[in-house]
Image 1 (cartoon, rainbow, N blue to C red):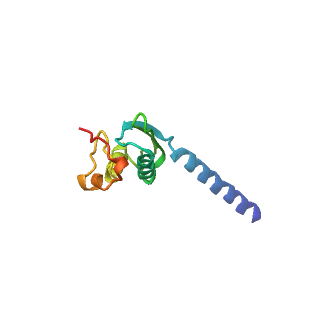
Image 2: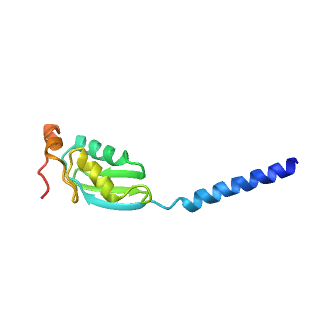
Length: 115
């Protein structure tokens, strides 16, 4: 009886490990432009992107204005990430922040709007 339980446990453990490794696709990587100026912008933009389920890593450069994200495409799209960033006040190459949200940013964060 104990042997049957042990074998059943090993089989269940094997199925769990096999299912986990098969379904875990490697994260994709994308880069896009995000408007902003300073360290406060950096925190806000990275926090917005990182807060989405499926985003593994989000890094924005104040110098180049480039956002690099690693994400799970089964859970989130690049458009979803850009939309979230625009929702906190920062224009992207695909979505523009609303005027109301942009106007509420701190003075140092008021960047030149993207066309």
